[in-house]
Image (cartoon, rainbow, N blue to C red; front, side):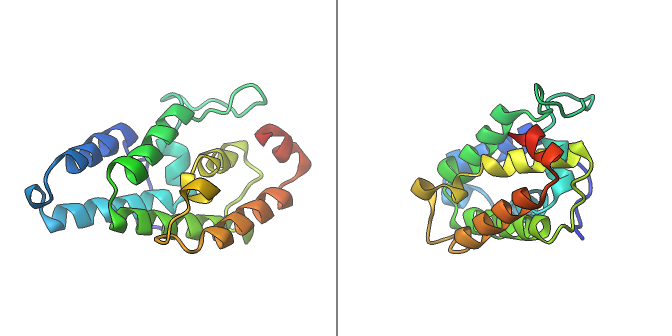
Length: 166
């Protein structure tokens, strides 16, 4: 499905993105920015990469009603950096396409949700500001489709899985 199969180092990605955000447009090469943009697209369109990248510890914990196993602070920092600090039309557009893609896969049940660890991707997606009304942008016109697919995917989960998420 995806060319990227392992976890990204979310902290390193954020540091690199912040360097781009803090530099002048001419300071970074177009090739570097394109590679970084592609990495964002690959990472945020893969449930397995998202699950692995935003784990709350190196040792995966089982998802329980008390512990999600997801470092939500890191997720929020990632979205804040990608959307509000970097302010790159290309990054926002590719993040929007990745969001639409992963929500579509979840709705079509192409991602197994019987494993509690796979449910973590829902928690990452729930934090995506592009799905919230005050942050919708012309760069992500498919937000309504992504949101519809995400809701459809949640509704199709077994009741035990829904209970873990909510």
